[in-house]
Length: 293
DNA sequence: ACCCAGGCGGGCG
DNA sequence: CGCCCGCATGGG
Image 1 (cartoon, rainbow, N blue to C red):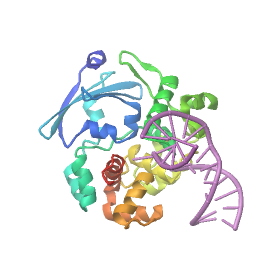
Image 2: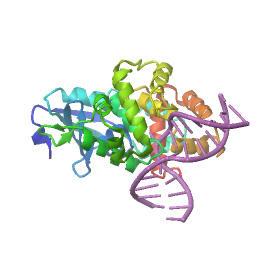
Image 3: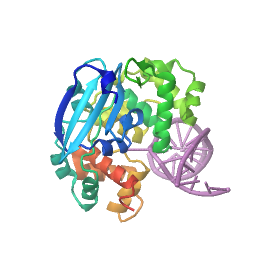
Image 4: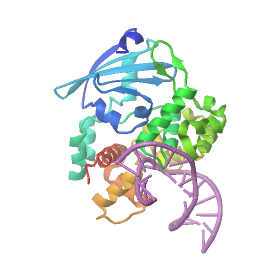
């Protein structure tokens, strides 16, 4: 629908193991700030100053991705980065498919991808996520974009406000977006990330160091830092433990007994190693959609 | 009405 | 350290 408005040369690439709907519904940052058209199997989203439109045709186990960037830049490159197309999903499924529990999730959501998002977008989305539910996270994120983002001409997409933009906003205006008690964190994190920390320069490959740096940000604790490491920096070792994952791990791997997050994290890293982040996303989404009830 | 949601920071022992 | 509590808000 918006393909025409975007104009310019697009990319058309064929990939295996790709399902846009599963990816979109699995509650990753992209899915909080993108528009999704279920009928067209298409999404539009902001990426910095440009907008991206993607239409996916799925046929016979393969998907054809048709994408356009509003500024005419390389759409294929954007897709490879954003949807981690270089990841060998068959290999990953083989590595994390250690038992029937997770194999069920893989079978059910075959083709669900981890996305790679901007570090700041990821940080803001997951600060919003704390003590919250997916529907409302989406609502609040949309409110912030509508209030503080700007139009990207000719696309119908609005940009995601940077930390420097939100740093100039009043806490009251941030609160008015429905952020509740998180308004203080968002105001503080915005100032910190625009003045005292360059998210783009953090050590993405060093999991421990990256995480401890991220936790210097107000409103970012263990869980949110893991989410940012995973979906904002592509650190696949990160294993975020939210209420769903905790419950599910205890149920499936600890005989229903309560465990400390530290123990669960060690178990996960030992079991799924460098792909623990993928295991987490499949467990999370399958659990949240009732697959382990 | 009550309970829960992709938790975190602060305070107390 | 570990544990416990309050927290804005909307939907089930």
